[in-house]
Length: 83
Image (tube, rainbow, N blue to C red):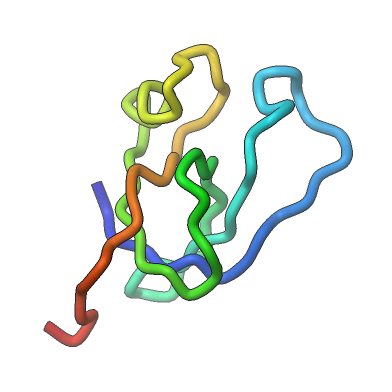
């Protein structure tokens, strides 16, 4: 798991069928690297979230058939990136 911040949404008009109804979010980790994640929890821009990656990401979506390797597992209510 990793803590990341939502920086925006990603809109794709053409997707593989396994991602047909999944919302996609652009995330930035604490080092500044950008990633795209499936968002089953409804995170908003600016939210800090924790993510599941690899094969665990499919199960975090609630549907192991979803083709993802990064999924938002939850929205963090309180966390300070500075410690």
